[in-house]
Length: 110
Image 1 (cartoon, rainbow, N blue to C red):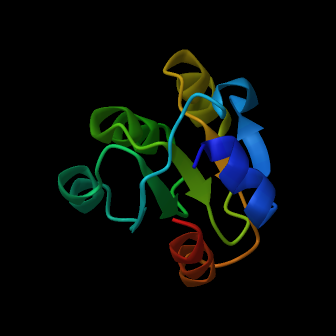
Image 2 (tube, rainbow, N blue to C red):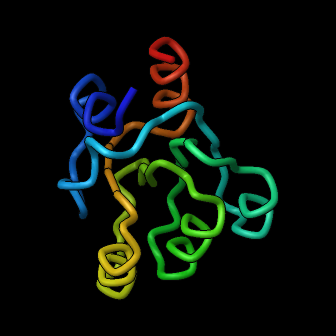
Image 3 (cartoon, rainbow, N blue to C red):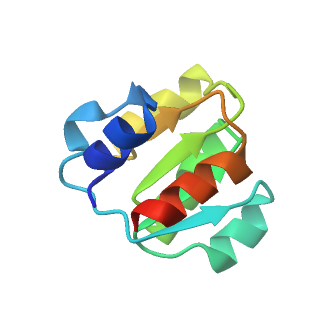
């Protein structure tokens, strides 16, 4: 399933890089906010569910090659994070739902 398909099915909002959503494939899901832990556990193709919308999270997304970041609970992405995400082709989505709710929905789709 592509990020774009996931976005539509879960009614997620694009924060940046909507144009890349068709290219990225979602093959799993990872929930976590401790960035060093996510760096060692998230894998290529995961939709990463977090409330961390800072520039460091973009670096983690690039290193782990996640399909996208989904900011849960209306967590904001700061301006520096959005700029870095655009520079590094990281798709960021947002939702008011919590990580558990989104993870359950993703598990039903993949």
